[in-house]
Amino acid sequence: MAGMLYLVPTPIGNLSDISVRCRKTLEQADFIAAEDTRVTLKLLNYLEIKKPLVSYYEHNKLESGPKIVRRIQEGETCVLVSDAGSPAISDPGEDLVRLCAEAGIPVCAIPGPCAVITALSISGLPTGRFCFEGFLSINKKSRQEHLAGLQNERRTMIFYEAPHKLLATLKDLANAFGTDRRVSLCRELTKLHEEVVRTTLGEAVVRYTENAPRGEFVVVVEGAQEAPVEAITLDAGAALVRAEMEKGLSKKDAVKLVAKQTGLPRNALYEAALQDEN
Image (cartoon, rainbow, N blue to C red; front, side, top):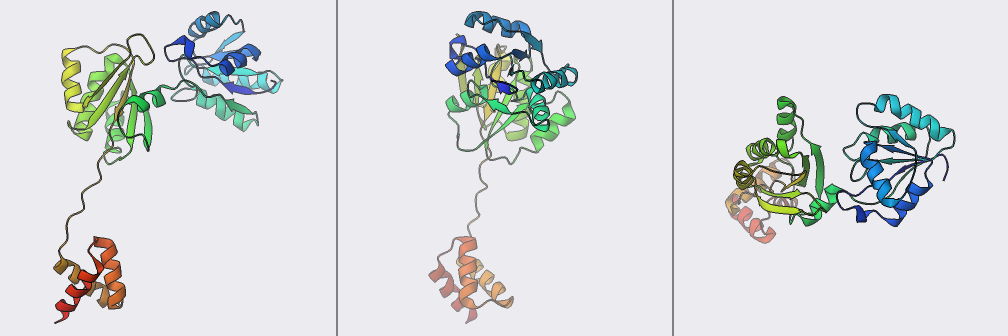
């Protein structure tokens, strides 16, 4: 390994979740860029690995990022880790990846622990389509705009939240999406006190008003339901056929179009259109 950036996911709770490949990559790196070197040192001690550590986090990324890039350009291999989970996901690592990409440096992401996918898989909510929304802004206006933009989102939505902000976030989610919207609250994933609470937003507000939340949360929220299609009568369908014919369509093509738009049976619609002419 030389002149590359490796993204190595670290356990989100249970240290034994580290993979053989992740361990081997850490062992072969020239140096490790860590969000919090103290947290990473505990993992390295657990793995019995000794490597030089450099600090790379939100408040020093503008200074530290270019230094890391220069070292990689000089032929060193860097492993980027976050405190837990996959680096570059809701994490300043995305900026380091961008710098490397701009410099033509190869970047390799190794699969592994990720709280987003772990929570989604056990949420009991639809997993076919989802969107990750990260942490909501603490700025009230930005938060409201963010949630307003999601009111018609039909995909399952995933948020991160700290325990001391959870109740306020649940109240905002309930106001935006309704108290009956289903939610799964995943707490302390892979740890000793892992817990998944499957409920509604309204019931979740009550629960955590009475019991102060503890631990880091992944909040998985059900997407909006598809708006019901209003039933349309054959008479109304016939009127639509007539309107399409007035635009220049033949009766056959007008019936075919309106049947597709309304779901009305084509034969019944044709008969209704005939009666409408008489």
